[in-house]
Image 1 (spheres, helix red, strand yellow):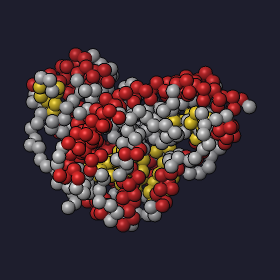
Image 2 (cartoon, helix red, strand yellow):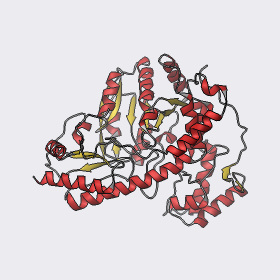
Image 3 (cartoon, one colour):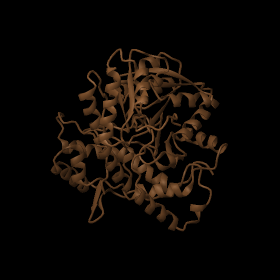
Length: 462
């Protein structure tokens, strides 16, 4: 199984790479990020992911086995020792714009979806159906099935560094439902506004307003959210995309992360972390861990299967502090009776067998190839334009040369059968000094990306 684990190493440190890996795994086990029984990547796979010698990982694993942290079982891989008895989990409570048919649709989510693992999903769904447990056909627990919450806790701790437990997780019908529930709870607590990133997702701003909460735009720069601007307000909640900011793609810098957590603790504030494409990271080297790990008591971590599998699944999850999770489930009880059970059980099977990891590796490989085609085409055909940010997600931010007429470019490209979204729509306050395009690339063939960029260059030249 091609498992992934979010290990952080520093190459120019005085501490050896082997010792860093050992220390990281020990601290994650102690902090609850790596759960008893969690299967770790093979030494070969982890060495490849970290771009280190395999002997470094073999030595680290061997020492941890000797010290009793890990166990190596023939044919079953390396796992965190099962020193904790397994306990049953008790639930915490008893549009894209329409456009004419075009040849190349470069909009995020425009007319194309990532490869769905149909065969794996069918096998997992069949196993869920064959389980025979009566609970699979009963009304689901409000917080989600025990099976999925257990698998999610292990997966999120291993792959994203999230510090949570099954009891602190809730399965929801996609991120939108989770955000709606959070808005309802915050309103009842007297919170009437939420800070949002600017530029950010325009649909998210509309959604917040429809939920009765005022979105207050906060600037984003090369280091991510401007926390100083946040601290100058009287806000008590903020919604951020720290790993891969939408739409610019920048990652929230480490010092900004610490500053943001400090703001939350000093103001009794709440951070909502939208990790909308957390598993889609194909840049070599370190993949940022979840912000939530810095302050689990102040951050609600929100994830979704929309980007990694399919938006139609309507499957998401929230990792929240216990008291807030209780309020979220009470809020949910006013609206529905939980997320459909069989889909949860099938997704739990996908996680348990390492099949989601395998799917993400394939998807990352494909998306990385498409992004590289975009970068090369922009370099050759659009002088003065650039694609900033790490290689991640299903979209890229294309900064255009200054004084480019973004609106004219978008409309001209559409007349040439290329649909693309301008960056201006993502700004809460209109700006003409930062022309850009938000380009969805993962669903297109490399040749299509090259041809679409050629059309953009021809329109710009005119």
